[in-house]
Length: 172
Image 1 (cartoon, rainbow, N blue to C red):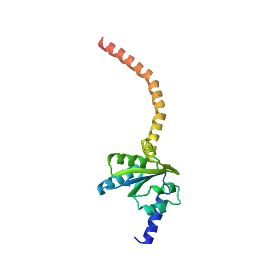
Image 2: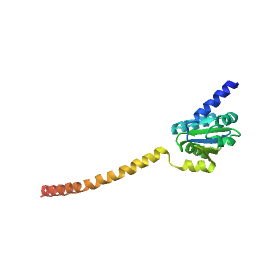
Image 3: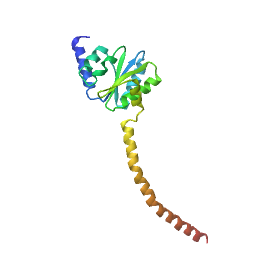
Image 4: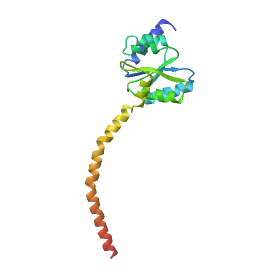
């Protein structure tokens, strides 16, 4: 690979981590093409990105960014998972690593905070941003539903009484 191509890769990697909130570093050894493709598909579906990296180029790309503290994690066959959502990449990576021994979480960073393996796993256990939004909407709509039920109950009871009297009159 010539120097211009390497510089282009470093610039591309630096640009791709520039606007993400979470970066998870994984060690992947022996992943088949089908497994890697499946992992990438799952990442894309969750709004995240998975990329195999060359360690030296990744260290150069992360050198002057807020993720510079995790540069020592780049040894051996590594790949990175990134996402703007602070949970998405961790959730998919941990879930995939639990099912497949060929992928191992070795650390990460959330904005400028370095995360260990346990921190990434704890982050993956949190609900995603979309799940939290759904819970808030549900909580906000629950009182309105209850009010409508309470207000409709007397009218429903009155209708039952009228129907009972009309059935009684028809039977007689």
